[in-house]
Length: 435
Image 1 (cartoon, helix red, strand yellow):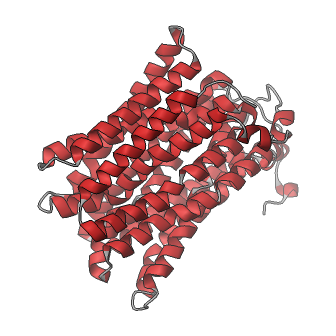
Image 2 (cartoon, helix red, strand yellow; image 1 turned 90 degrees about the vertical axis):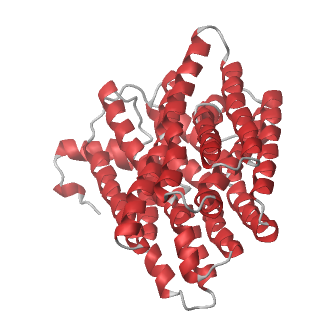
Image 3 (cartoon, helix red, strand yellow; image 1 turned 30 degrees about the vertical axis):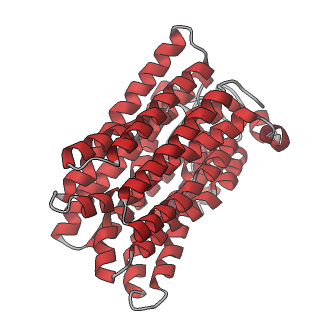
């Protein structure tokens, strides 16, 4: 704890406003917006770097520890059990107490749990309960990571003008691609040059460095208080009214459908290439597909802004962008189920992952449209339910592979789920406030 008596007056004022009491909120200046974007982008990058470390290392670790596909599926999917549990609570607490505090606690948790993951695997490798123990460690890691985005969207909703929120958060989520690239480049190098254990330790250490930076930034960034939104932060979320609205449920359902595609690929893509094209260099299969996510996010952002400027409603814009995402993914998943060459598979996966960039500027920002005053809570609900495919879909994919040894079956099922989500959102989706 920092003693208030030891702080100069101006630092004490910053501590009160910026970190300990986000209820007295003001809009960021342009310079502050830039600083926070860089900081949050780096945090999102490191979040995904630690998240994708286990999928990257799974083929090597499972071979060394003699885990089956079902065991691997259990470990990969267990992350999302924890990821689901903390979404709603962290969003609600962020709306009431400030996103910075929740984000800092979350970062400390997922950084430490990543750093010690190799120790958990090695310590219990000879135990008959090894898979279960590692899965529990992944649940803990997922629980901390589940707190990140609800706290981010709560923080940005309270410090950005309404027209800035969608593009800011949409671009912020593209940090997931950079984080994945960091894992597959740095992680692949460390795994080859040293050992798979060092990957967890390095990525966990980078996360801890960002955690320290976030704490320092929370104490030193000065803001000019322009507008207080204390009433909106402390207003009670009308749960019953929210749950009675079809636009909310269509947003939640479609987010879950798209997440199913993203999480299955995030968790199983390294194993798919390892099984199907074993002679291809690992850095290619782990890095190239993710290169499309960042440019596609920027394209989706520019297209969204252009549509709105030319007279399209927010509702129509969100539906157009999300339809591009889901149809692109659904079609290319069907093609992927039949391809037999490495270049064809790579092109399909680049288009599928690129489609996620459109999702990040459509449904991912829809909670700010539907509930501007409760965006953190609503996003937490949406992402909590949306994470269900993370453990069900990823585990089911592992079970299908274990029983049928058919990647085509996994891809076709994922394609159908994407198409269903598209139909539901086109029918019931909205970009207008509902509460």
